[in-house]
Image (cartoon, rainbow, N blue to C red):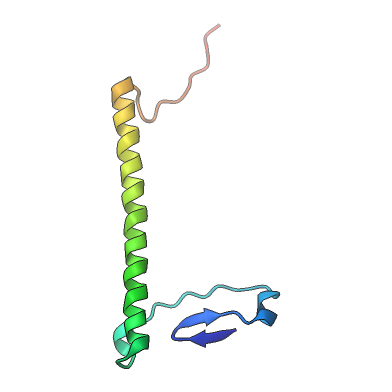
Length: 85
């Protein structure tokens, strides 16, 4: 495995081995000015946008489910009950 600009790249030999994922939060401002620092800011922005889109989708889904329950007169936490005999 080779580390380039804070990103781990797997070599073909390492790809066959068991991989342990390590996440590190890199402060882009700590990098010297230049292409690596610019790439760091771009990657950070993309990651933040993806996290926002995931959260937005989750909130939208919850809202849609709540709207459906309200329209159908369902209680969101209703549990099926056993039929009386």
